[in-house]
Length: 156
Image 1 (cartoon, rainbow, N blue to C red):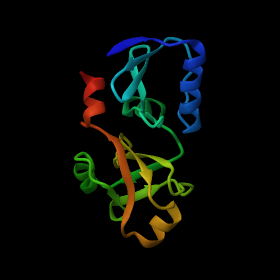
Image 2: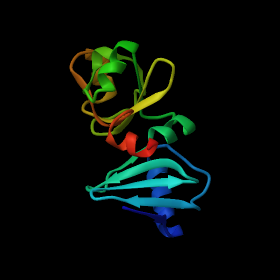
Image 3: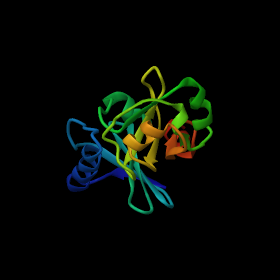
């Protein structure tokens, strides 16, 4: 495990990955990476901004989602679904009360509770129009959620 500052070029690449999922930060200076066995954890000004897995998938941290409040890719769930999702369960359409209707199958989604607090990141398994039309079945698979291993590393 080594944590160090990355080059401006690498930092710009991280910022571009964030921007591609509608999460923007002011500049690309002072970005650090914590290289671990199968994952890279990124920080800016000592705050967690996201991680990249061994497949190269970049996932924003819940901390950065709650500070930047992305306007696209969101799914709002009812309070009954929150506890199941906090245990890593898949998101089912029955628990959704609102969502960005532009969500496509395979897109990264940001899951928030009824108070607007983001607590999970997932991948949509169906389009928003299909999910809302049927209101049945699986809607998203979780990638990252509050209290998972990554979250616990960031809060340690």
